[in-house]
Image 1 (cartoon, rainbow, N blue to C red):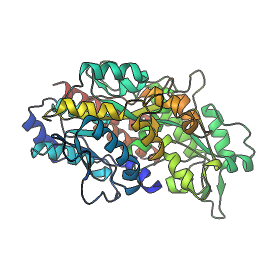
Image 2 (cartoon, rainbow, N blue to C red; image 1 turned 90 degrees about the vertical axis):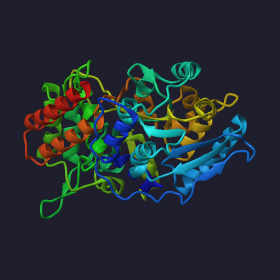
Image 3 (tube, one colour; image 1 turned 45 degrees about the horizontal axis):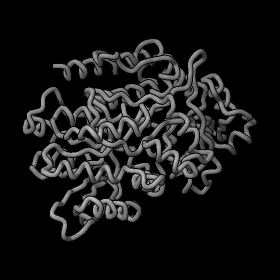
Image 4 (cartoon, one colour; image 1 turned 180 degrees about the horizontal axis):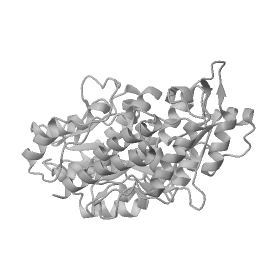
Amino acid sequence: MSHYRINRRRFLQASAAALPALIAACGGAGTSTPTAPQAKPAITPTAAPHVSGPSGASVTLTVLTHWGDQSLLKALTPWFEECARKVNVRIVHQTVAFDQLLTKIMTGRLGGQSVDIYHFYNLWLPDFVGSDLLAPPPVDVVDDIKSSYGQGSVEGVTYNGQVWGYPTEVDSYQLIYNKRIFDEAGVDEVPKTWDDVRAAAKRCTKKDSNGKISQAGFMLIKGWDSGVVHPWLSLLWSNGGEFVSKDYSRALFNQQPGVQTLGFEMDLINDGSVNLGFGLEDFVSGKAAMTIMANWWGASLRASSLGIKSFGSAPIPYNDGHESVALQYNWLWGVDKNSPHADIAWKFIECLNSPRNGKASPMGEYLTTGLNALPSQLSDQKALANRINDPFIKPFVDALRNARTEPIIPGAQEIKTSLQKQIEAAWYKQKSPKEALDTAAQEADRILKEKRQ
């Protein structure tokens, strides 16, 4: 389960070959191929689609997700069957490994074999909308979404002023720390400011007889676009900075707040508090005191030999004079524009996201039991408070009150991947923070200009 959760977020695999042809086939304009992030082997999906619903139903809907792990299917299938009966449809549930999801969506549409319903990452919205892939929800569905979900989640499924689907899972970032290491180092209070983090990281760092860091005071996640950019962007916002201009015409992350933010990460490295050879597994095994990571990682920490009680979470550290701001991102259900049964597809999705007599919705139940994730729907958060308000998860829930959604802009994936590479170049002292961010901003400006044409 923990292996699945790491792979699921780590690898946003784009179809570099399929997207240009898809755009041409669909008549979309102003959308170019997203850069493919790094990929590693993911779990094997189920060998065959799973079928749910009454055998006599006249309509069959095909649903595509990356939830092919048997434990996830066991948690999700009963809810699919319940809603299939209520709507009187048969559901064919196709699954692929996460690193194949975007490719499957693109190539399926191009080959005339698109499914009816998708579950996807909201960063893909600009490309999907630009290539005319999605069906706008009915008015009553849009009204339900706007009234049942927090502002951040609604913004997370909105593009060009249009809500495109039901938010499901919401993820936010927080500072995660090892309680034992803090206790042994005499760190009595969880760091709140950047200066606090530097001081605590120094106290928590240990080196072996050769001077190599054996216990890191802070862990920077590398080799994964979200692992590099999401924590950095949370820190940028907690320093009063901005990612791009409001009209999406140019990058702003290379201005002074951005340089200071990357400079803060470089301070941790130069202090000798970071071992860039460490990865997520090193934190899980207790070799690092702090990192910034998303709530879904709690599943890995729970399953670790140390157990979830060994770890704590706290707000994103802020620079003096500013406030803590966490990044959040969403997943959503959407319907293919070419589906001949779009109206019934929306009814099925609506059933999955409808509270049941004061209880949580089917999706809320699934997200908190199958995925150990945070549900976006406000009523689910209330109904499932006993699950999501444990000491580790509660700070992530609280952070949603003022969290900012990951910028949903044309070319977002390309910009993100480029920025990741430049931030890492600074970490390895190949470039100064200013040089690295200027290079990334120049590339971002090029991409943004291309999308406007």
